[in-house]
Length: 162
Image (cartoon, rainbow, N blue to C red; front, side, top):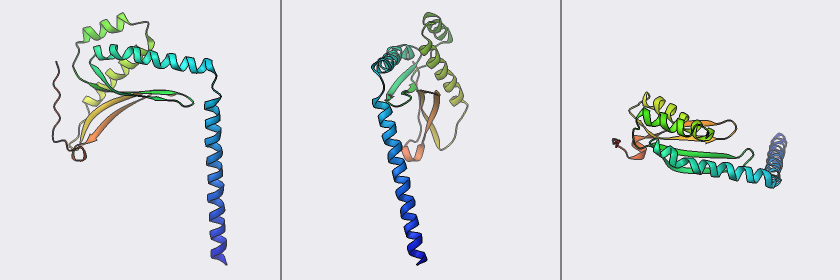
């Protein structure tokens, strides 16, 4: 009898957890669908601003590998970049001065430069630097991504700068 009672309790617990999860999913989806047109337009403009600054980031030596737009509450944009050339500090300073009114550009470029400096001080035999990911969200997040050399089939990675 104890076994049946334990099975019934476990089944009920799983059922309750599933119901709670489904309720949370429905609640989340309803919040997404309730976003007004003003909020949607603000988010679209926000994403367009990110797209507009990608060529500026490239002038600073960082190439965009991919961009992921998260349509969620809060919305997010992930920019995955790799450094493809060293750019003289004078040029970086000129870019920052020229686009000083573009807060998004300054935030992203400073994050990339900080991450690049940080990752250059970390090395390991098994992992090799792959890319930097900036997630513009609440809160913002910067990730430095590494790949396992053996899994990736990489023996050595050499980067040549222009």
